[in-house]
Length: 113
Length: 115
Image (tube, rainbow over all chains, first blue to last red; front, side):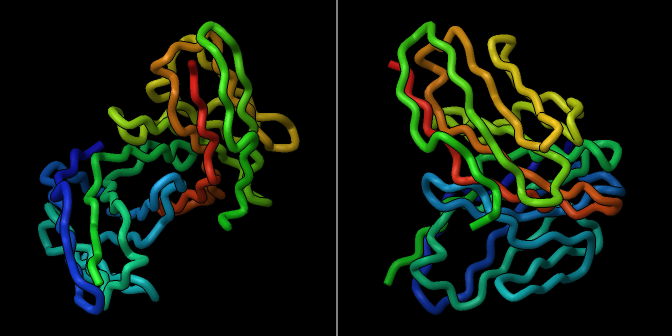
């Protein structure tokens, strides 16, 4: 699986837009980019997934440039409840039956009032 | 609520003992995954079962084993426990239909403390 690099931590204030960038230089042609969110002592929660260009859902946007060597998770107007660890994952293990996720260290986002 | 249930929520035991963690996947999900999260190792994939059969193995110790039953619930057995096995153990499930969606639904976890 492609190795990912993300900032260890980020700070923001309520109401601001937060962009977390993930580097994945070794991404393979059939790899997808997936982001998860994890609150303390809870299981990770799927946020968004994309392959190229831009994907948007009700909670976030994912921007992927043409070379796909990086991606940016954008959280609009964050609130205190967005304080969590955000994981960027890349890859798809083999056939459709093998989908184990490889989590890196993640980015710890702290939102201040 | 993800729809995945795990029991027990907390477990305290002694070194050398054996414990069993249980997971019930979301209704309709055929695939179950087990992950271990400790402070110094982050989230580590242990093992995956799909419709009763082992499908993928990660960093699972030989002292650990798992199985998925016909009703699709899964159990993770940890034996000869060591202090370093203290961690949060998460179970996740997914549909694993055709396509590339990597959405897994995680349970609330079982916190294991080995004294």
